[in-house]
Image (cartoon, rainbow, N blue to C red; front, top):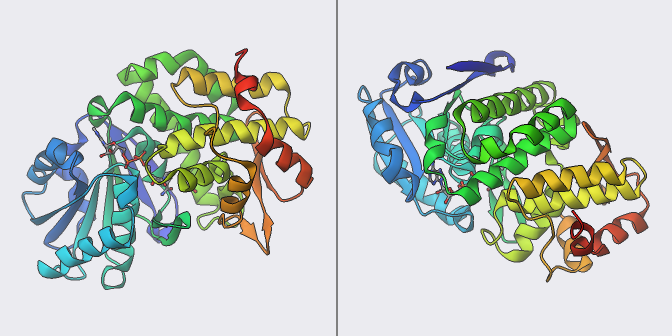
Length: 365
Ligand code: NAD
Ligand code: GLY
């Protein structure tokens, strides 16, 4: 097992990474203050892993809360069912919520923990690559609104993050690829040598080679922890973690939540951010194509949906959380391995980026 730490003073917490951690009660016990625990999971993940986790919680009264599966259920109605279950079972303020699942479960369980009786402890047990490298770390929790992705939520840090890499073996390949989009993101925004490593190891990652996967998760969590340590509430550098997300969230909202996976939308959105960075003269065409090729090799879409017009993008991007005083800030690349957040770009360059023919751009690659 490897352990990293998110350093946030008295809210610091460990990230444990290893195979078989679900079966290690001693990793959970230090973070459970009361006698009751609620495991929030979903209809896909619960049958696979809730029994093992419950066995590790034999010392506690355990309430399973099983949500319907899917991004389309990341909403108020589903959140309410978590509160219904907690109140019906009379869980008090010393209860601990454990999120067992991907980013959808983690974001919702975390938000429920932030709100229930004004805040109870929670532990993240992420089971998708995406949630293991990104969403379980850093304390962003929330739900979607029909008008915008992740528009309602709270910053609320977990007590611990337990990454059992063995859970990735049951993950469908499409979901694994979606997670790789966020892994590649770290290489692009802050770690060029990691990008080179990914180019050499992307096939091993898609084969879920244990050594490669553990290394990628560790390096991603290290990068994320550093950013969160420096800027927990996203007043600066944390926004760089949203490379490709402003375009990507527009795709998710326009297409209907769950139609494009979050990681897939981020991949196509990242291609758009690369294109815009190139049009601004910050990165070369070779740099842009390097990013696109890696996304392709990871099994990700690199062309935005044909039915989305520039107007669709503009409409959704106008309510992005990075809009300040009506100015849309975008995460772009100054160079490979260095991201910036800026609203200082000619409008025409954004328009040209939205109108670009991505099919023609990727065809020769
Ligand atoms: P997800 O939670 O929908 O999980 C993907 C699919 O895999 C689901 O069908 C799920 O049931 C299934 N699954 C999960 N673990 C499995 C396993 N081990 N074996 C088999 N199937 C399994 O999607 P995701 O990609 O994990 O997360 C996406 C969500 O995370 C989005 O809502 C996104 O907004 C959010 N997110 C949040 C942050 C953050 O910082 N909080 C960061 C990135 C993404
Ligand atoms: N996934 C973006 C963030 O955590 O800030």
